[in-house]
Image (tube, rainbow, N blue to C red; front, side):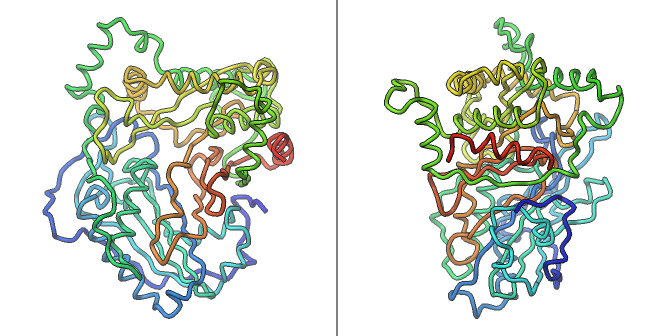
Length: 482
């Protein structure tokens, strides 16, 4: 059952933190204190983003002391921070331009140890978010001063049944999804709990410099100049995702329920969204493809599972929220630009390397559009992400506006694809995690597409919805899937 953000913990025992330490890089390599300049992509959401790994009781570690696991994680983190040294730093505000950069000062990460008498089986379906999950994460007190906030925090919790959870919070200014995945794989490998260290793990050495993504650098300015001289339309049109977002905000401000200058764009807010996970099995996805494309008759038209489910979700969410027919509605989804840049970003690039692709229609057009036509627009939006688009997108963000505080807009559907990052395969302990759940994020209305550990052909869709629209969304989303 999905729960609200302010759901209580009365049905679960308390979680007691027994130890908290600051973890510094091992002195294997000396990294002098320095400022690592961030890109505008890095600055969009500097808050900590959390995931929690669940490991059910296992014979292999039933007699292993919590302290032993904690010390192995600490040692592994020290070694990992020696290579991923910016993760031990702090964000720093440039007083001249008011922008955040990364101060590599070896301030350290934070690792906590905790215990609870709760049993993992009491949590039920681990794919369904529960507010209790938040107690499994170390949450540093934040008073608005980023220079005092650690960029990596973690907590290992032993359950009464002998199972474990390991939660990790990482600043989104430090890593994007693929970089976080690589960092956690390296940390798990270096921790060597119940296994040998795997020096053969295929992880590229991280590249921390943001390079061509730095707006305002000589390299970035040269690219912008060439772009302008080439007659490309990108600087004039801007990035579609930014343009569409501005149009949606104008539309919301002009709406009948909105007074100009108010704090919310809709009658919903982040605080009352329900986080719900829908498991789409491989069979359900294939069934939808057959119903949409007519099985053998679809001819040469093909699409990925992401494109199909994104189109289906956009249509279902827009219809469920009752958006007026003449209103502009928008689907935006993250695209990794590591290989879209010219030249491509180096292997192991550890910063944020994603932009949003965007499609805009009226609600009436979307409802009248077939799945196939909507999927074609998603393909076109994907193909529009070129080097020129990335430069225009990066430049459009130069005003310093962050999306981290964007309130829910019913007309905006946001999707983030995690299916190529199988977090559950990261074996901090013995074998794969039973489940890995994202915790409440600064933008809880985002729909995450994730692998399911028990159905590799399927997709778990985790989305935040206003509670009054949950049943309607479930109806429209699951139609043609069962």
